[in-house]
Length: 318
Ligand code: SER
Image 1: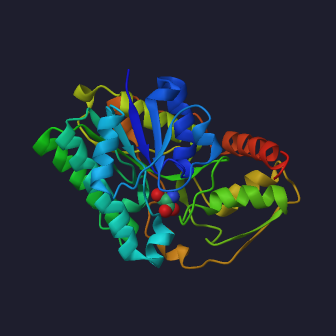
Image 2: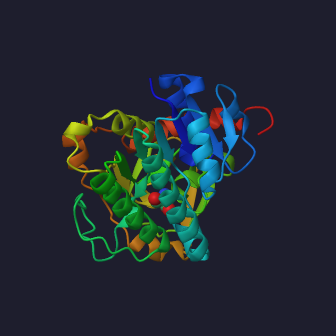
Image 3: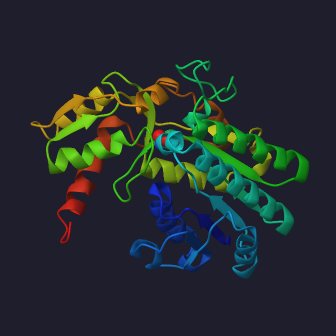
């Protein structure tokens, strides 16, 4: 049995990952943490504690007090927000990851998972079917922090035998918690607007293709990598993906279910960020080393997302 502590647990991924982890490992064995007051969803079936991962003393105390084996460090400032405040993004993303890796090393914990992103790639990376091992020269602060974290984690594995693992998540589409400050956020906002107002203005141009994944696949990839046999891992950082689409293709899929939905396009500063990222990802290394395989494609994701969000938005108080 594992005891897992998750940082940044009220974020887009954390909010749904916590529930899935508690189902698998038991409510009491999954400690949700964050800097804010906990939303109800995180306290319903297990503990939530305040934790700022920049506070090394508090971090180590909580890892000891709650007898933690595995840390999932989800704290991150995303790409768009990182360009608005690059200094804060560096401090938040890199310093907290360094603290977590150090704490895991000092306390001899079993495993640490820190997400990376498609943002770790840059304009000089081949943009179609981007391989796992390829040139990485990102031009956003968010991407730079993610490359730093990947390299630091892999250094801790080589040098100190820390069991570091990382997934380069693509854009994640989900119905529970909103993402904040990312470039792929349009692919979540579009669903809310389609259901509420039947209109959406995209901040990316209609033909901006980006790799994406539905939340159930994001959760599956995360748990599968945590559970993967360390002896089979040649790599420590893995590309994962499910689908790649453009805003126009997503809008057309939504129109199949909401026929009077309309979209227009007003690209803003996010466009330059998206243009520096891969259009599609080769995740064959993850498939080979730990059996990664997504369940959702564009039509099945769109259908499920609209169903879930309609139910959520029609609930009392929404
Ligand atoms: N969803 C992230 C972003 O757009 C990509 O990792 O910043």
